[in-house]
Amino acid sequence: MNIILLGPPGAGKGTQAHRLVAGRGMVQLSTGDMLRAARTSGTEMGKQVAAVMDAGQLVTDEIVIGLIAEQLDSNAGNGFIFDGFPRTLAQADALGELLKSKGSRLDAVVEMQVDDEALVGRITGRFTCGECGEGYHDIFKKPAVENVCDSCGATGAFKRRPDDNEAALRTRLMAYYKDTSPLIGYYYAKGQLKRINGLGEIEEVAARISDALDG
Ligand code: ADP
Ligand code: ADP
Ligand code: ZN
Image (cartoon, rainbow, N blue to C red; front, side):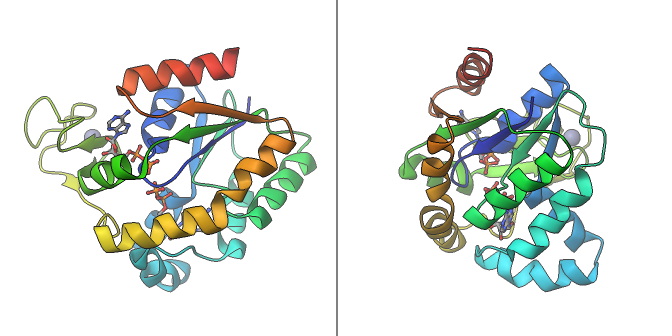
């Protein structure tokens, strides 16, 4: 089953994608993670997108569609989870075409609904493990032992994103409402949209997603 996790920054897409990978053997394709990896490894493309990302703007459709196209030939496990992609109608059309060309299709689009006020709190408290990518939060998901990753045991490897500040978040929210939210209507019209409440405990949200996918 191939699915999209759709929602504003901080909706919990990455958190829930990690759980689906662990629980269902699905493969997460996060364009945000791919772009950050390109920056870390210092590729020409990575340098080109750095300032755009830090400001909270969208990088070009051409770049992210290229990144996804490269991954679709890799082992899909029990299906792909598209996390943070597509973010524009052009990206959504391109994804449909790419999947079709591989003889595959999209099975569901899960829209994670979270209030704007809650997003600000989630984004400003977010940090991740630099070793394994596990996500944490200052209030909602603290590691069991301070400074040690629950998931891989790394010490002192936590990091915060340069775009997780209020100014960049405002720009990212604007990009979401302007360019990405039309995808809700697009996938509704295609009969693929499943809306879930993204507020509440991480476990509760995971259960709602499971119900939406299996129901
Ligand atoms: P996204 O990938 O949609 O931007 P994340 O999965 O990175 O969102 O979540 C944003 C922040 O909110 C992280 O710090 C994460 O630990 C936290 N978080 C995720 N889901 C929940 C939840 N249901 N309740 C409270 N905090 C959450
Ligand atoms: P979040 O988890 O907070 O929603 P992401 O990690 O998905 O953020 O994305 C971080 C940044 O990477 C975005 O603000 C944007 O600059 C860029 N980016 C990621 N995915 C896309 C995409 N599909 N289209 C355009 N830009 C993207
Ligand atoms: Zn870790």
